[in-house]
Structure formats: structure tokens, C-alpha cells
Length: 280
Image 1 (cartoon, rainbow, N blue to C red):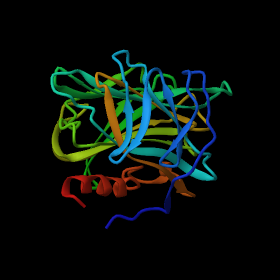
Image 2: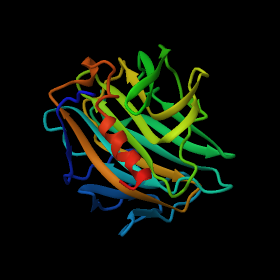
Image 3: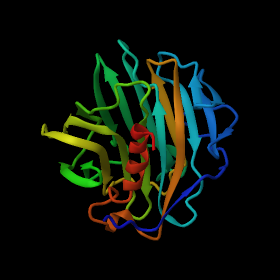
Image 4: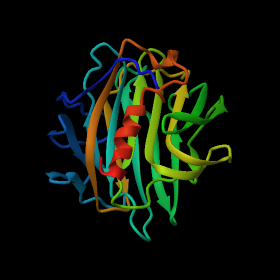
């Protein structure tokens, strides 16, 4: 039995934040959150979910999702299911970038995650260079149990990939993906889930049955006081479908004080996502 700290999932409207990172259109509300198109992208709510369409090959078309204020939470994050990223014979990708208020006092990008399929090979690449973390920790799970934990020691400079990641090859199967900021220790975390698969880890180890991976940017030299906007941009696909979006808040308990951090907090997300494959 896994013990979870008190958490809440909220669906709330937020005030549109227009940052310096991109020029955005007027906000539209989907899943209770303000969305603004970027580039040539169009948004439409359908019976299957939120359609993000008219995406070009530049990688500059997408959507900005405005995060609500943390309201006293020690940790705040976005969680979503995205479908249609994988297309046969095409190089495709989704880039998630997190922005907030850093030392400059204005919104700026803190970190990013790129999920891509190039020549049929999936990989995930992270860039934490803007926040200069003391270490990057990668935790691999199977149904909530830790399989392996790896640490990339400081200094961490520039983007780095995790190759051989079993991002869903089926365009009908959604990728569960999330980004979080812990306000207590200023740690940024990306994680994603899928059906049980085989994968090769950052350190070259091979794992069976891994269904959830978290990447933690720990003890950053550049600290952000807020997580204001999630920027999602797409390459190689003309349309993707977002079937779920949730804002997750953890009250009173900092994930920095848990062992292992974050993974136990997100296990409910893994269960929810794996139900997609069983019809539950």
C-alpha cells in the first residue's frame, strides 16, 4: 500500500499571462484553463477532446496554457494526455517548456522537455541549463514501485537525452505527461507514463515493465518563485488531440522531504493513465 500526502486536483480558470517568450492570441477556456494559440495553431473542443490543429513543420505552432496561482500549495503542476504524436514514416515531436517568474522578476523559460520520434526511434531530451541544477535525478517505476534511480552529477550543462524511451508508437494511444514545480526547494520535475514497456535508461541499463519515469532538476542555482505558463509546441504532425488536462496541487507537504520524491505522489496518475489501455 502506498501512502499519499493530501493532494487536490483542481479545474480552475486563470488570468491570461502573456509572456515575452511568444506572441499569443486571446485566451479560450478548455478543461477550466485558459489556452492561447501560438503561431498558426487553431483550437477546437470536439467529442474526442481538445483538437490542436493547423500545425506546421517549424516547431513554433502550439498552445500556451496559463497556470492558476498556487494558493498556498507547496507543489503545483500540469498533467495531460496527448494523442496523435506518432505518425508512420514521419519525424514528430512535442516540446513542453515551463515559464515562471525568476530572478529577473519577469516571466521567462525555466526548463523544457522534448518528446520526439526520429527515424522511428523515440527519445526524450531535457534542457535545465537556464536554472543550473546541482544534479539531475531520473527515477524509473513499474506500477508505483521504484525499479532504478540514476543521478547525473553537477554541473549539468545543456540539453541531454534519454534514448530508447518507449513513447507510444500507436497514434491512438495517449501519452501521459506532466510538469511540476516544488515551491519549497524550487525543484522542477517532468514525468510521463505509458503502457508497460522495455526501455534503455540514461545510464544504459535495460528495464522491463517500466511504465513511469520522472526527471528531477534538483538544487537549482537559479530559483523560480512561480510556474505561470506551460508552452506546448509540435513538429511533424498537423493535429494532436488532448484528451485530459488537470492542474495538480499538493498542500502543505513538500515533495523535497519525501523518499522517493514525487513518484509516490504521482502514482494515482499512473493508475488513471493505465486505465486507458483496459477500458477502465
